[in-house]
Length: 188
Image (cartoon, rainbow, N blue to C red; front, side):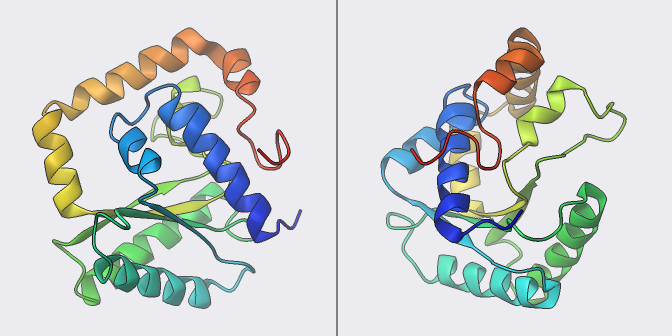
């Protein structure tokens, strides 16, 4: 299925609002979303070299924009990397490219995928949902923002434990009821 940019952004915003913020999977997301500091970008097509170039361009744009205007970037990839293991390998490639481009110490790369699976977890383990997005997504974060978040919430392990507890309480049916998949729910 091919998604247009507007639909991919609508899907991702719905996921951020309902799952990431709504379930408090990331206690730091609400403030930047409310302030409009999340930049949503879409890379159409499936050319991975172009996607890598786009990620580096988005990284440079993030560094060149004041944090109070753009604190983080979600680069959504609706038409490529549908296989989680291919996406995982590509994310590793992007981390190396980011280091070579001089972003180490300034930006971090996180990743989300519709079929995300933690090492050692079963495919249907509800804990995987903490990193499942409607489309493959590369997330650029400022190191300074992460540092501030860690000061406010110093035990990151508690966040992971909270997420697992929340998702286990919710269950697969509850996750499905959130309606946060690709193309789900129509346009907000």
